[in-house]
Length: 251
Image (cartoon, rainbow, N blue to C red; front, side):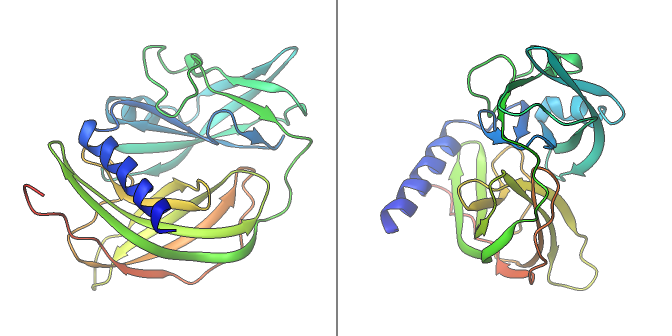
């Protein structure tokens, strides 16, 4: 476990010290994943692509495979205080099973905009599963805060809290988090996080992020977990934690 944690921190440190995530879009489920035939897709805009994504609600994109097409209507989702926005792309019908579908981002997003979590293809692709996902995720380990990570680079501070969880669920999952400072009258932050290999990173990198933290402050996170078809896991208690303090200059 220690070696895995060390590897995780080193990889994050390398990314933070090299550069910020940059401008572009990210999609969930992650490209290359297997998705249910009733999936929804989340599209996130970062940096200069934020406004492009923020303007999408009401507009239509397409998921295409040989001989079949599904239209996706963009619906308003979540807005981050730190330069990110996410919309929900809801299909007008089911996908065919066992097909490779391509999201035609170029229906609404210029081809010059980078897909930051893509697989190297010009547009994101997924493989559809055997059928729809109609069952809610079942907890085998409720969400818990496992550690805080704080790093400094020439670009600024990267600060995350890692949330771990486990469930019986075949579809990709994401969590919607409502984050508040534990003090009267504090404004809430509300945004979405993908769950990857049983964990989600709550926080920010130097140039943008899903959630902003203040050094050493106490926070409460209320977490809702959904699968990619929109099924909601049973409710869980909120998570209380302290934000990790930023390293001193020169460390």
